[in-house]
Amino acid sequence: MSLLDILRGRAITIPPLDGAFRPNTLLEDAEAIARLTAPDDLIVVDGRVFCSSGDTVVALGETQPVARFDVRVACLAARPGGGFAAGLEDGRIILWQAGSGPEIARPAGLDCPTALLFLDRDRLAVAQGARGLKPSDWVRSIMGHDRSGAVWLLDAAGGAARRLADGLAFPWGLAANVDNIIVSECGRHRLLSVPLSGGPAKPLLTGLPGYPARLTPAAAGGGWLAIAAPRNRLIEFVLREDDYRQSMMAELDPRHWIAPALASGRNFLEPLQCGGVRSMGVHKPWAPTRSYGLVVRLDARWQPVSSAHSRAGGQRHGVTGLVEHDGRLLVASQGGDVVVVLP
Image (cartoon, rainbow, N blue to C red; front, side):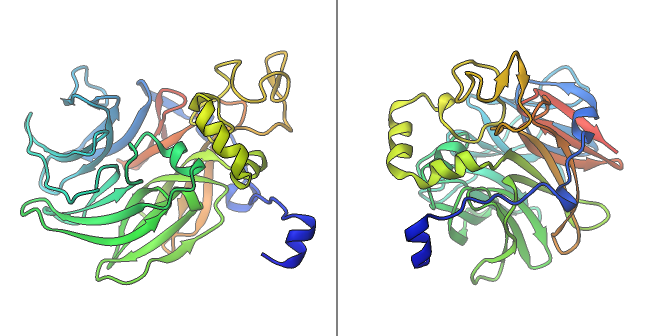
C-alpha cells in the first residue's frame, strides 16, 4: 500500500468480462441432460458419467443411485482401473467399488476435502479447503480471509501422506500437468502450479473475474475451469471493511450475507433485493450480481481462450463441476439444479 492509498483510499477494481471472458448465452442455452438437486462434481468411470448430488452419487441416465452415504458428498475422483473415491462433508475419504469401500487413512487436520485427483492407482491428491470448516463452507472461508487450505498427496493403499502446499485460500480444483498439480485457489482468484517433488507453488493464472472451483482436462490439451460465483465491487468492498464484515458474519444468517453465492434472487431477504437489484421482477442491468454461470476453456499453458456463460438474469449459475466425455463437455450447475452439455 502506498501513501496515496492511505490518503485517498484504494480503488476497487474487478477484471472485466472481456476477451476470452466476453459474455454470451452458451451455458444458458445448452441442452439439459439431467435434473438433479444441486449437482456438484462430475467424473467418468468405465464409460459412465457419475455426478454427486447431496448424499448420493448417481450415474446420468440411470434411475438408481450408484452409492449413498450418511452425509453430503463433497467431491469425487475416478480411480484408474475402476471405482472411485468420494470425499465426504465430515472429512472422510472413501474408496468405492462394487457397492462398498474402505476409508482412506488421512493425517490429522485433513478434514475438509474439496477436490480429489488420482495420479495413478494408489497416489491420490487431495485439496483441503480450510482447516476446521466443512467443504460446503466455502463462502465462510472467503469472507473470513481463511488461509489454512492445503494440498496433500495420500497413498490410498498404504496410508502414507505428504503435504505438497499449504497456506492456501480454499483450494477447490485439481488437475495433473506433467510433474506438477494445477490447483484452483478460490479465495485468491487464481491457478497455481504445485510441484510433486516439493518446492513453492507458482502462480499460473491470476486476476480471474470470479471464484474458481473444479478443473478437468481437455482432450485437445489444457483443460476446463468452473467458476462458482462472480466477483463484484460490493463484495470486494465488504471484504476490506473488517468491522462490518465480522459483524455481518456473527449476526446474520449466511444466506443473507453480502457474499458470493451459487444462486440468487430466490428470497426477498437477500441483500439489495428492495429495488437495488430487481425492480418489478426484472434484474437491473447495472446492478451487482451475487451469482453467475461461467465455464472457461484453458489452453496448454493454462491460459483462458474462450468461455461459456449464464448471465446475471439466467438460471444456470453456480458451476462447480465439469467433465469431458465422448467429445462433449458436461457441466453441473448447482444454482440451476441441472447438468447441461456443451459440444
